[in-house]
Length: 147
Ligand code: IDP
Image (tube, protein in one colour):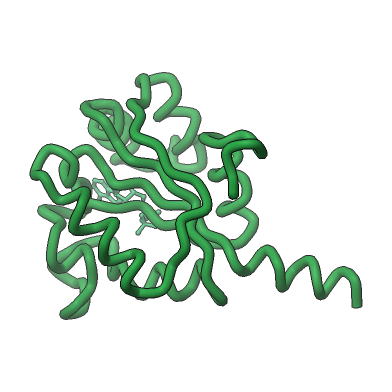
């Protein structure tokens, strides 16, 4: 059906950020290289910096969580790289590639296992659903910036 086709198309994209810890530690190049080697095509890419207000808005879904303040302050503490990536089954495959939120629990071979420091400073973001991938991508990129 038409609806199923749209759902299928949406499942081809995810949104990611290389977080301030990984940027400061000089891992951006290695992490981008890994995305590409794992078969993700770069649809959109930019280096930027979130203000506290913008970081708070991006993570508004977590505002009742005890770590919200820490998360907002960390995510606005330095530059990030934001990107939209494309691949079949993008959201799920990307979550597998980055590994568990806490790098101590992340599987061998995952990006967080290799590059993350802690549950808060965990190197990369990956959308958790097709719907959030679309919302988060649109938060950073206009349609004209997506190829
Ligand atoms: P996810 O990024 O693996 O989907 P979420 O539970 O959605 O994990 O949390 C969003 C982000 O909030 C995490 O990536 C991490 O940066 C931060 N975070 C999660 N749990 C904690 C915590 O217990 N302390 C500090 N920061 C946390």
